[in-house]
Image 1 (cartoon, rainbow, N blue to C red):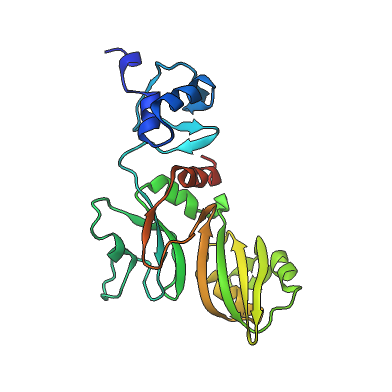
Image 2: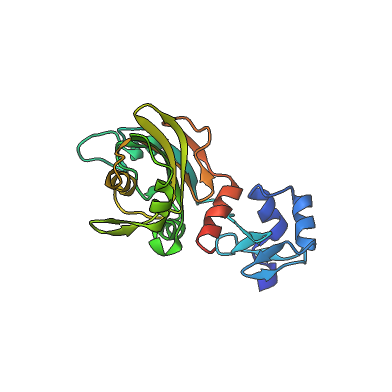
Amino acid sequence: MTTADQGVRLQKVLAKAGIASRRAAEELIVAGRVSVDGSVVRELGRRVDPETAVIHVDGVRVQVRDDLVYLALNKPRGVHTTMRDEQGRPCVGDYVADRRERLFHVGRLDADTEGLLLLTNDGDLAHKLMHPSFHVTKTYLAEVEGTVARGLGKRLRAGIQLEDGPVKVDEFRIKDTRPGRTLVEIVLHEGRKHIVRRLMAEVGHPVRKLVRTAVGEVRLGNTKSGKLRVLTQQEIGSLYRAVGG
């Protein structure tokens, strides 16, 4: 068998990955909207190895490997971010105990923080998402004590000095104000431990409740507390794009 005869036809790989029907996938290829390993492919006879080929459609990475899993969990409060807890406390691993894949969490949320936590067995992507050099943003909704002054956002974007170094937010919005508390949205690419809680305490507004609502372009959406969902191809592609893939 020659190299040209090896692998799976590209349009079949795209169809199996849920990108489009085989016919529509052929149209994407002919239109020059598909690339394999950095080169645009226009011929319908092209075969690829799904295990090794890096495929983009309209510049967005497409994951075509059957063995890779990408999940979003809405982590409840009180659940520890570990795949196994030696003290027997509720942990993230409890929610995927029945899955055959060896999954791990991407980053951490402390036990008192709720919201979006990504789980995968794609070690390369997970490493990049967690590495500070890629500046992947995380979005939080925080209920904090007191009434937040309008000028605080500017101060937070300029940077606040903490005991382990400065931190600044990418975005800050006041979402709601009620007597004695304020609901704020914070976007930052920091990954240090308890960073949101420490940051808001430093500026005089301790956090009462904290929920992570997004990692990059992947949003918590209407996923209920304690529930898992499979990421879409578009969401997986957005994570690859966030880390330059």
